Image (cartoon, rainbow, N blue to C red):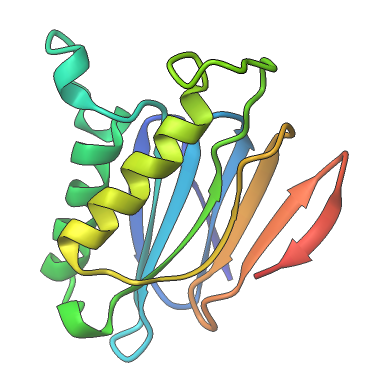
Length: 158
């Protein structure tokens, strides 16, 4: 199985059999989308919720509103059918112990991710978000399973 690394502020797509991996999700969110019938999958690693807050940053993959849309469009180009796309998400931790909603980037990232997926009409079938610990995720394009790994909380498959 081919292993494809998805960096921070990055989007990658693949055909099965492949494994998409992103490391060190703290307040960032990893978004995995899949059309299991056509065998196409993808992952985005977003850092921030809203591209309009930093209009001088041209990296569309960095933000939930633009990065998720980019991932969606790439999957459609590969032959994914809108009605068969599903998503799994992980990350969005409150890594700095902030009690302020403004400073809790992780929570804001999760909210923005869910809002964008809802806007696109892509249902979330599983998630492991929030709390206060980092995660590494591995998405299996063949069966759609998402392995969430944490040195503090152990491993689980969603």
